[in-house]
Amino acid sequence: MLKHYKGILIGMVSGIVIWLVLFLPITELLIQPAINYIVTILAIESQRQILSEDINQSIRNIALTAIGFHLIWGAIFGYIMTSLLRIRAFKIDHNKVDSELNKIMNIKHCIKRSYSISKKEYKRYQN
Image (cartoon, rainbow, N blue to C red; front, side, top):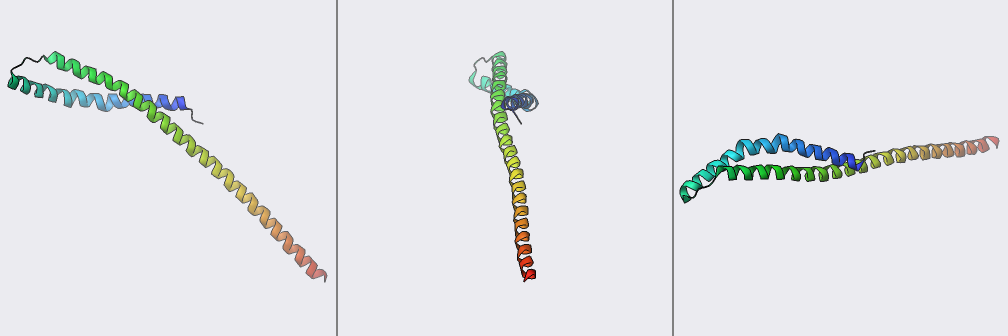
């Protein structure tokens, strides 16, 4: 049976993988160049000095904070998936037991019925 702590760990690992595969490349390849371009345009228009190091530091902080969010999301997702899989396994096990019980009841009913028929036929042949 699946344990919740294993589901949580698998979810957290999945969160880190998603962060590495999706979030980090998109941030580095698409968002950071766009932000640098937007800040350059704003700095020219406002004639204020904006340090690119401040912008890069903000992007790093956002990326590092996102790791925490992905870990939390993964833990919650892993817990929910483990719970759903446990419920499904429980239902499958009980459906097997119910179907086997129904088979036994059908066999018992058939035996009873055949016994009562043969008893009636026996009495009819005796007379």
